[in-house]
Every structure is written in C-alpha cells, then in structure tokens.
Length: 289
Ligand SMILES: [Ca+2]
Ligand SMILES: [Ca+2]
Image 1 (spheres, rainbow, N blue to C red):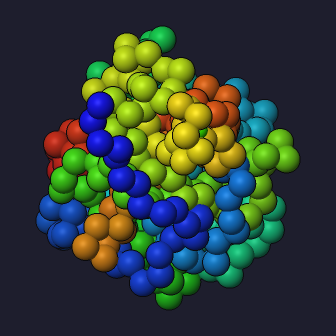
Image 2 (cartoon, rainbow, N blue to C red):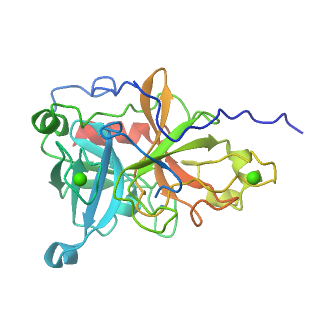
C-alpha cells in the first residue's frame, strides 16, 4: 500500500488577489497585432479571464440559436476553449465581463469571430485533444479598457509545470446546476486535480478513457468509501471553461473542462484537458496566426 495521497482542503470561491498575466509573461511578444454543481456565486469580475462563449452552426446563423460554452483568455486576441464546442460551428461570440447571463452587467461586451483552430490531434469518437483556440481580431484587453476600465478582462497564465495534483483549485461556468437549470450567474466550485492512478482507482473510468492530455478533477474520496465523493462538479454548458490553480500567487489555467459521466456522481469525476501538455501547440498557433 502506498501512503494516502494528501489533498488540500477545498473552497468554492477562488482565493482573492491572484495576479493575471500579460502576453509577454505567457511567452508571446507584445506587438502582434459538462457545468457547475453545488457551487457558489462568484463576485462580479472576480474571474476576469473567463469568457461566456456562444457557438453557432451555419443554420443557427440564419435561424438563430446558439450553444453555450466557457472559454479562457490566454492572449489579448485569443481564447482557449474545448474542441467539442467548436466542431461543426461557423461563428462564435465571446461575451466578456459576463456575470449574469440573462441581464446586462456593467462593462460587459461581446466580440465575434469566425476564426478558430481545433487541435489537429482531435479525432471523432475520441475524447482527447479537446482544445480549440478562437482568435478575435479586436484586442480583448483594449476592448476591456474601453468598456470596463480593464476591470472585467484579464489574461490567465499558461502553466509552466505539470498539473499540481492535490492542490485546491477552482472551476467556473454558466452550465447546468443541481437544479437542472443553466445558471444565470457565474458559479465556481472547488475541485482537486487527481493523480491518474488515484482517479482510476477511485472512479468508474478505464485507463483507455483518460488520454495522456487529460486529467481528472473532483472531490477526493474524503468519506473513504472507495469512490471519489459526489456533490460538486462541472456539468453541461461549462465545457471549454477554465480549471484554475493558484501557482506562486498567479492565476494558472491548468485545465479545460472537457467531459464526465453524469454530473457530480460518486466515482465519476470531471475530466479536463491538460493545458501544460498542449502548451507548445498553443504557443505555435498564436505565434503563427
Ligand atoms: Ca450579462
Ligand atoms: Ca467517497
């Protein structure tokens, strides 16, 4: 028996005072021109790097309607979201400074894009490589300066180290809640990234389901029944949004909400795309587009 893995105590609201990043800190030059279960409502503008994404197929562009996802600002012109949000879509709207999905928030603004790039390793019927980069021709940070004096947008930091398993981290989104509604206000939830062997041991997932660019995050098996604990999770509509861990006082985009079996069930933690694993791809796409 290996000694028990140590998990930090979780909180649903993100630690205050974390620093966002600049394009330069994320390694770019400057002059380039599944849902939350049992979360807590965040303070407006406490997640300035999160984006409420609305994706439209060509049909929806003509007839209306959209599907919602989350996304994260990783560069002044780019948002990282999930590939399965982008697939078969023709246009995307990013709503920045969003808190209440059904009402106006001070400073919120919307940019549109028809320019997005799905990770080339993405294959149908496989859940890995669930990453999509969306380019906005207008600078998101400059639009934030104009609309909300920069208070409602910020760039999340790209990770410079592997997933910090066991650390107290947070996911957020406007997805399905335990009441089976989409949330109108942004909710966040505290989750632990789980080591792979721990996830396989304490979940119903098979090793073949957890790709090398995936990791599990959820509630550890605090009650000792052999399964990850139920009750808190991301859910439908939260896909593509961030799992954030605080690293050296900074907001680090550790994971992209990808998939899970059910929501918030015991032994079925959420599965996230590992941003550190695809950091080279992110950098090369942004530097060359
Ligand atoms: Ca709003
Ligand atoms: Ca348990």
